[in-house]
Amino acid sequence: MSGLNLDPVQLDRYSRHIIMDDVGPEGQRRLLDADVLVVGAGGLGAPVIQYLAAAGVGRLRIVDDDDVERSNLQRQVIHADADVGRPKADSAREYVEALNPDVDVDAAVDRLAPENVDGYLDGVDFVVDCSDNFATRYLVNDACVLREIPFSHAAIYRFEGQAITVTPDSACYRCLFPEAPPEGTIPDCATAGVLGVLPGTMGCLQATECVKAVLDYGDLLTGRLLFYDAAAVSFETVPVERNPDCPVCGDDPDIDSVADVEYADGCAVPS
Image 1 (cartoon, rainbow, N blue to C red):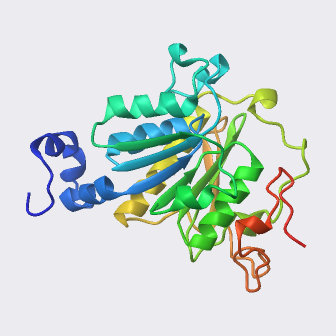
Image 2: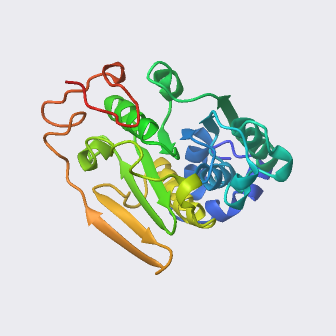
C-alpha cells in the first residue's frame, strides 16, 4: 500500500492505529520495523510484552532466567497455570506467537550480564527494563547510556510504582541513584507483597513510552520521575536534572564500559 507494504490482514488488525492522524499507516510501519528488548517477563514485563506484541512491534526480544511459579499468576498475566515450572521466556514466546504472527519474537532463558549485554543490545531501538533487582537495573542503565539507546525503567512496591524514561540527552538512573541501597534494606515482592494490578498500570506506562519513542510522538517521561500511588489513585512527577558528577553520563564519567563495574546488588562505582 503506497510503498508501506501493509497487507489486507494488517490493515484490518491495526485499523484503530491507522485511522489515527498521529499514527497512520506510516506509524504502523515504524512499529512493524521496530526492534525492542524487554528485560524480564514477570510482573512488569507481562503487560509490556502483551501490549507491544498487540501493537505490532516487529521484533520483540525477551530475556529472563526465571521459571513461572504459581505465586506469579496473581499479576503476571501472560503466564497460565499450565506454565508453572516452565521458563518465563518460553511461556512469553508462546504467548506472543499465539497473539500476533507479525511479531518475530526472540526469547532467551538467560540473565543479563556484562559479558552478554552488548549482544542483546545490537540493533535495538528501545529497551524496556522490567527487572526486579538493582544489579540488572544499573547494568541496563549503564549499557544503554554508553550505547545511546533510549530505555524505560519502572519499579513496584506494594501499592506504589515509579517510572522514568532515559534518552541520550536526559538524566539517567544513576543521576537519581548513583549506587544501590545496601543489600537487604529494600524488600522484594516475595517479602513485602505487591498489589496484583499495580504492575499492570506501570507496565502499560512503559509500553506507552516505548510506542511513543518508536513513533517519535509526544513527550517522553524524561527529566522527571513519576510516582504512582494506587491506594490514593494519584500521580506525581518530580523533576530530575542531569548530574554533572554522574559516574556514567556526567562531565567526567568513571564508567566507560560495563566491564568496569561489579554488578552486585551493592553496585559500587569503580574506584
